[in-house]
Length: 334
Ligand SMILES: [Zn+2]
Image 1 (cartoon, protein in one colour):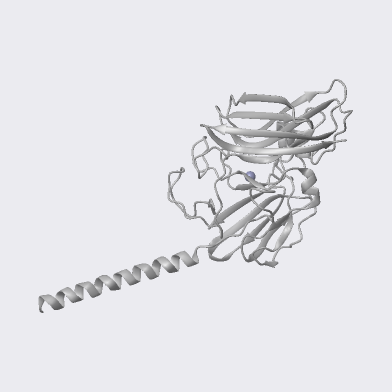
Image 2 (tube, rainbow, N blue to C red; image 1 turned 30 degrees about the vertical axis):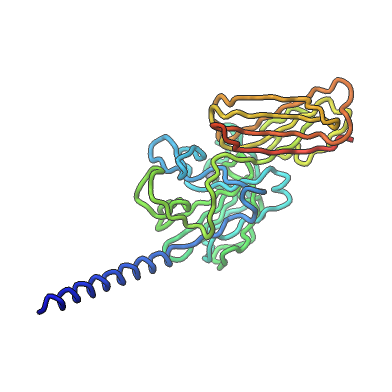
């Protein structure tokens, strides 16, 4: 055989191998699912991701972005809404892909679990009102904490991607209104931001299973507004000050912010401006301890009456000289 022929054969075999490899890669990629969101909302606008899957096998925790928006052994992604008032208006939980309903539980009360006693009372029903859906190729999705008596699918029912399954709630082991989504492949938990992997920890290759790009947001706003009494986290979850009206005789005017993912050494800046454009409060507050959930407020005690008109609250969260959260809220005092 001539050298030239040998060279040609070598080149041809190389091309063949290349074609086979690319074909396998394409086939594999097309068989990996593309999941939709389990909730009908606008991420970053009227909903947010509070917790991700814990990728640390030890009793510590780490999320896929190497941050701390997860907790030990958390096996899903938590999509949250602002409060119980929004929950009552109804936010849909939707199927992330075509499939068949495997299991359903409904009838569990919606509750904001805040202590060990309440936690113990719902033992065995941690998922609350939940649904499991079987998809193709060994995939399964589970949706937890739905609103009591809101589930509209039954065992054996075929669903399409995007089918409404029920409404977001806070049943089972849940301290805020949200839907917890667990994804499994052949029984093994898969982080949808990572894809199937044998590796642990966050410094790994990630093949997102979502059908859209979802930014990693380790720090963000849940809601902000005004109150006429000291806000507590529980009251904010209840929606007590959601679109709250305050009048000029109110004893206090408090500007509150509910957030997730503050870090030690972040600095928050508050400003409260009255209808005459006077800065009533100009305050700086260094964050002393990192926290997954953060409720903060500033305010004015009212000795006589509040000036009628539009009051403005400004808030900034700064980290390493960068603005992480920046917002303005207005309220009309009558
Ligand atoms: Zn969860």
